Image (cartoon, rainbow, N blue to C red; front, side, top):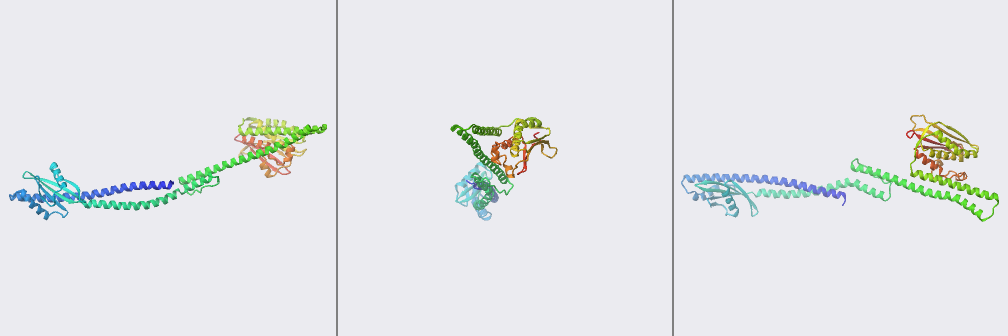
Amino acid sequence: MKFRYKVLITNLILLSVSLGLVGYLMIHKNFELAKETQISNAVIQNNLVQSSVEYEVLQALNREELVKGALPDIGAQVSSGMRAEDVTFFIYYGDKLVYNETEENANLKKVWEAQQEDGNKNYAIFEEDGHYYIYVTASSKVEEENLCIISRSDVSDAYALRDREIRYFRLILSIGLMIESLLIYVISRYLTKPLEQLNRVAEEVTNGSYETRIAVKSQDEVGLLAENFNRMAEAVSEKIGELQEMVRKRDQFVADFTHEIKTPMTSIIGYADTMRSMELPREEQLLALSYIFSEGKRLERMSGKLFDLIYLREHEIEKEAVQVENISREVLKVVTPSLAAKELLLKENIEPAVLYGNKELLVTALVNLLDNARKASMEHGIIEFSGKKIQEEENPFYYELSVKDYGIGMTKEEAERICDEFYMADKSRARQEGGAGIGMSLVALILEHHQAELIIESEPKKGTKMRICFRKEQN
């Protein structure tokens, strides 16, 4: 059942019960007031009849007449002179009914018997032939006998009024509930419309439409719910995007890795098969073995960097305070032979400082940057390796290490993709230099663990500058 129907039914039940209770109390109160008025009038009529009868009885006693014999005439005289049209009365003297205007019935007998037991003025209401009558009794002592006067009044008007009010109230209640049902339905439909929209959008998101959002038009609880749903949908969309990007990168990684490993393996297998299947001169054998050795070393470097890459993605690193000069010294030990082989001049200018990080990983990152600078530089070129403290107070960085070359440079698009796995701006040059396109990915991951920022400034045919900036709060 829809929520708006639940609201409609609940409101109708509550409204019916509350209006029914209020109507019952009002009708009951009006009926009681009308009945009390009728009872009061009946008692007054009874008092008038009693006074008149007792006066006439005293007159008969003064005339020394027998009371029992005079009572029928006294009753007739009082009846013709004083009572209202809807009032009849009866006179009992002792245990005999001496005057009656209608036939004696069972209700009259009950009232008289109750009067004999009680002796006080009483009344009782009975239904007779579709009408309601009130019997009022009064008694006095005359010549040692009980004189009982019973008046009978029609009080059907009070009950008729009650019945008319009940019928009228039922009619009004029915009309009111129908109008109220229509109003509640319209209001509940208006109030639940945002919930229906929310449900529809939730179904669209479930079916894969992650960009669908709800238009927030109110600041109530439903509006807040819509805002929270939009934030949740945005978070889900971002997570889905991240997962899709992760899957894309994984597939691209597998494809690139397969391609990169296939190239050296093809060379190794080809040269090995040549040496196995035929006799080669000594020089050609050495050349083939040289190719096999170089390609094997390239596979070794690739596997080592891949292991580091996977390890860093799954584990946290240990950090400590390290001197920048010690890092620089270790880096130069590694890169000096390869730079000398290409007759490159390395200009070093490192300002002393203390960094908080992992020494081995920082050395690895800088070695990769200097090796990339070597690959991009022509023979007899210059590479600058510098480090300096950042003095500006408003600057978020504390220390900057940079590697600058004057080689082939990169375009803006190439610089943006340089940290992707297996990406190489110039694949032929990179493979010729022994690269596999993993080094910069490893650099980016190392810097991420140090919460440092890599800034790349490059221009084709003019060179590249790689800047590593360490944040103040991390040092």
